[in-house]
Length: 272
Image 1 (cartoon, helix red, strand yellow):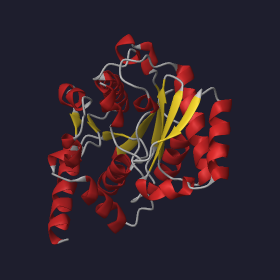
Image 2 (cartoon, rainbow, N blue to C red):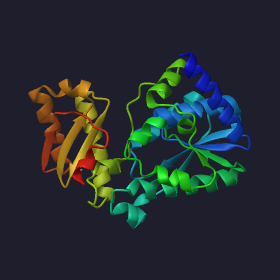
Image 3 (cartoon, helix red, strand yellow):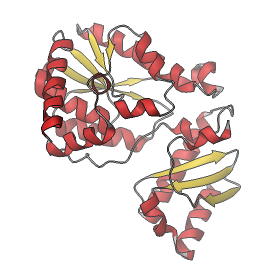
Image 4 (tube, rainbow, N blue to C red):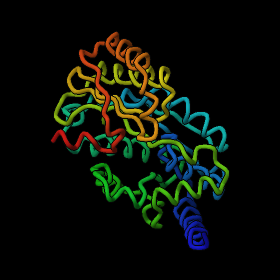
């Protein structure tokens, strides 16, 4: 804990230095960006604001949650409209699609920051993320004025959750987020219709089972449901299975399957 507190003080100094002329936090409502927003607001007050993108690739539930979290933190939240589907480099769904999404978002946030008279943008990549498939981080490195405070100061995902818990933030154990495009196999075109169907399918699964973490992977009309490993037992009922299958078929899925291994981050990489 002593080491964590030392790193936290170093992080606050980093925030104070890089954000001295005002900063925008790339906000999603996830643990990383929300905890970063809370710390930035603590250090800089109104000179730190949060900005979230409203896009077909994110669920309406996440936007509602993000607005509530920002209000709880006390930080001012702006919502900007983006549409990655208009970029064919993204909608073709290549292995590095996240690069194109992140690049467009960060350029928009830098422009937004300048309109406010601010000079810096913070985003939430952490040290643990570098062990995963993160093509979007290349965009972070390319856009001037964008910083990754968690990564620069060596914070792992578990340490960020520990900081959030220490600060008394209610979202410290919130499941990981990912955009809806991550449910579609690479090189299979991303469309607004597919994203909407996935969003509605995941809301239906949550409503019928009570799971907190779910991914409905859309394999060209076959739904493969992943839930957190500890939540798999919630599907051990014929009535639940029939209910889920019925609801997802109403949404247009031809087949509905349940992944016995549970949720796996980046599982679509296996489709390459």
